[in-house]
Length: 124
Image 1 (cartoon, rainbow, N blue to C red):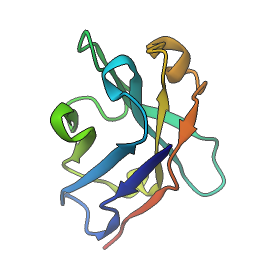
Image 2: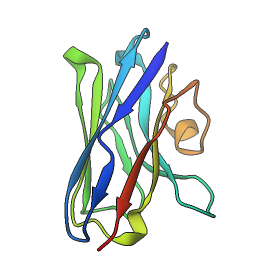
Image 3: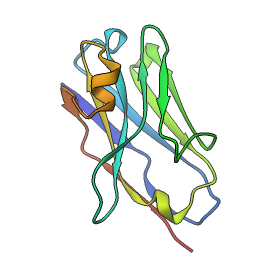
Image 4: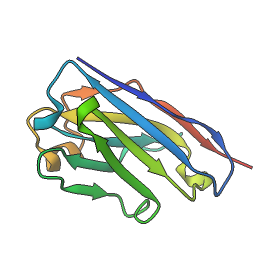
């Protein structure tokens, strides 16, 4: 079982990035899956998460209106479209999944699987 995250990079303030997370080896359809981030010197925080079957989506207040989580069920991939990036969005972004679909628990950081992280740097 793997979560393969990709799409990070160095961008300027105001730019956009799209992160991808591919779920390999488990049934994404029954899971809750989402994105977390950890900035230097800060604790890990939840960014966005979705219950795949019922479509419920959570967003952190800091990213509402700028980030959009979407999914491609056929390919077991989720995406995080990040717009209007600011230096405060600089962090390592991780995808994580709770295979039982417990979205609230996932939001609190309880995950069965974690991806390897992808670095997003927003700097001028």
